[in-house]
Length: 389
Image 1 (cartoon, helix red, strand yellow):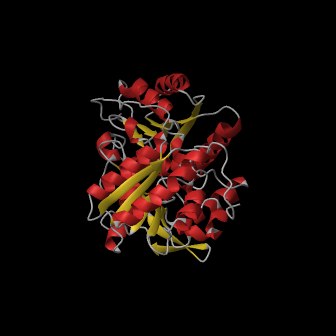
Image 2 (image 1 turned 180 degrees about the vertical axis):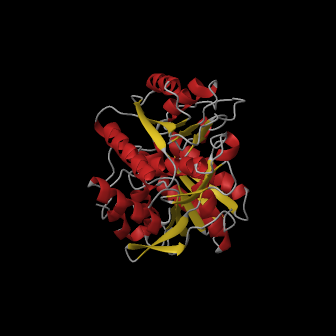
Image 3 (image 1 turned 90 degrees about the vertical axis):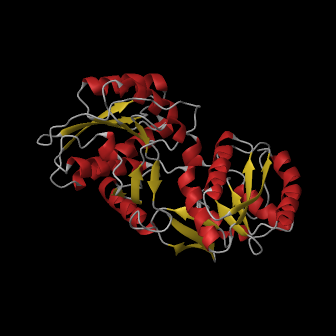
């Protein structure tokens, strides 16, 4: 599908597909003085799982999130979790009602919702109850107070890749992004990562997310890259959007991965057909520990007869963190101080920890596309004392 340039009249804007949907609005973080509830460690701890529910894609991801949460509960040893599921309808109003009911039912912590607007609303609803929310969003705009985001953030990925690039002599980085909200957020994350590292920003170019805009912009982008002296080009687009065409058109205009390192903010190995694209050979991207991820996929498929949704691991991670804290036997196990412990947790995709500002930090591997397959060139760290932390 990538052998020829076949742009739709208007590119779909699905770049950053697992992430862009979570940037639904410019929500403000909840501010609360509450630190968390007191729990009875001798009894099953009520945990509210907030999922979109409904039909279609929301129903698929909801079922997968619940299945993963129950798989995690089954893995807990000596810890009892009373999981209660509440559909939100995928919107702020439904999330408000679900969070209110969960609090009334005695929940000690909320896991979910998925979308930013819903997570923001849920957090506001239970802030006065002293309850914390571990949302599945990756939008740092809603993080803070009693709301945490479990989704991998652009800052995590950008920081990992920028630091690795600098360590390998590819620290003069040129950034290319489409003019869309999600990709501009990604661009800013890369810029922050560069400013906090030994790398330097060689330049930035953007293009209109349309067939005409992309084709018209590529020659100028290529000229800018060549004039900048960059030895790496960092893209915010993914293979569901403009990345396949950038990887084809830039080499045709004199900028190839054989001359400068191509780096992707998104998973350049998705879909699998992308691995055979000539323009992506040698490209770098960040990914969870592949062995741990595959183990989760296998275990989930064995339990439920199908592969998990790509976001399902977030539900497992949330339960794993809750279970680890409750297992300490302390009544304050679900306070903000406990949730943000520096040592972090181990989830299905590797290590992660929650930051006091509500964002997260995840241990990621660096992968490279070589000979139409993915090779891990720098493994994911096993603790937060390792590279990148």
